[in-house]
Image 1: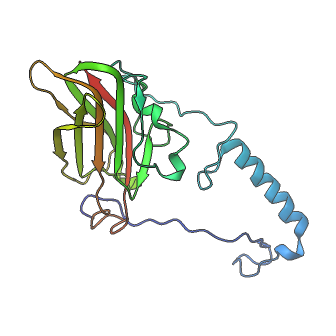
Image 2 (image 1 turned 30 degrees about the horizontal axis):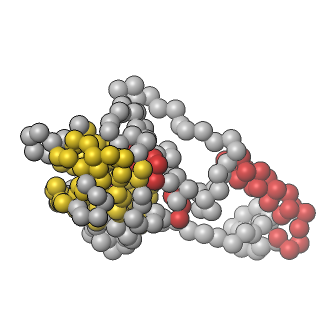
Image 3 (image 1 turned 60 degrees about the vertical axis):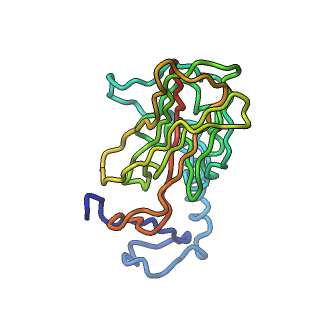
Length: 239
């Protein structure tokens, strides 16, 4: 509806055991009668979790790797002024993504269209704020921040993005405040949002990015009325 996928949901069930030969309709739980079978199945499940991980509990698997991608034209890294500089998160990411840390926001490696690739920091129900310390006053001609749009996964672009600069880290001057228009889009895409400075550039040591998410997923979306996700990656500073 309105360009969005149809309703979907995730349902959790308590563990149960059924005798499918005698009870194909799964009406009677026989777990208490066969603790040996339950133990054997739980051991198989535990081995799978250890190897493959468990996204619901945030557990990492020992045998996982990034997916192979047939996308030779996609740029996966970029050089810019802020690479390996100090980035501080002014707001806390969602607990699932805290382990990724602020360093990925200025490491020169660009996130893909997959929000699980380890390059994206996820937020939900909160604004995003990140001051960047370049280490010294530099001439800045462009500042962008990458946001992920993957609406099927409830990931939307922010409603507004504010970019400000400072020489001392205390007094900031807003370069621009970008209002983002929400449009239905099925394809996942990394979208840079930012500003070019006036001719000659701007002198600053600190750059602050603030992004305000949409209040809720829009009507017609499966998550309508519920908080969307906001995913952030590289803060690119050009000179």
